[in-house]
Length: 256
Ligand SMILES: [Zn+2]
Image (cartoon, rainbow, N blue to C red; front, side, top):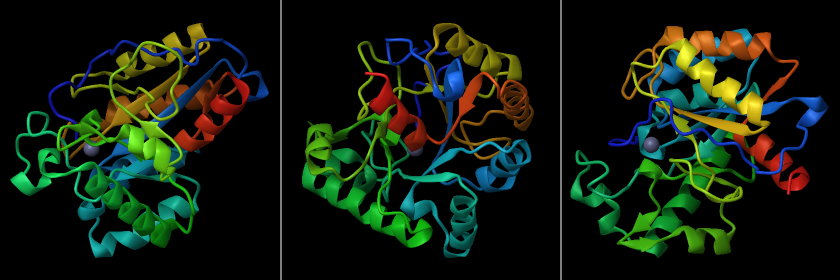
């Protein structure tokens, strides 16, 4: 969950800065990410993606996965969607997430505790999808543990391949701090499509960050989401839609 700075028509990222071609001469790369392991993702977003033959990335919170949902997430991975690491308990600073219990706020953590939790979530993901490596999304778009920045230790430890952050940041693409654009419940399909069109014009990469889709919280409507997917499918000759790690593999190896 990411409360407090959900962006509508966020400043859009064109990254990396040097515009080159994406695979098969496509003009832009679009990544669809969904956070927090929400039921509306299983019930609404994934069927919509499957109907459009598009693949997304789902950053799961370990403590949000009910045992009876494991088979569903395993099937999601088996059909080509990506499962990513969003920690076990989603600890982030109290100011970013006031409902959290004291034990779940990142002030109660230190860097070692946070890295141990990320390692534990990697193990849980491997048990679900059988993959040896995973990407990561920072809870609440923050990377603080006990007030210390844990991103340097995460980089050094090699626990995760790439990290999706939150708000756009200036400068060249940093694979361990990749911005994403979030939209609130008033976003229309046209708003989401306008963001894609901006990426097409700049030759860049756009990472969408969603939570609920037609349900749960911080939601976009099922209709807006469906209109976005229809646009992406219709323009598949020029827009590359792929999971986060797939696009980042390409971006880091071809577009430096
Ligand atoms: Zn989250």
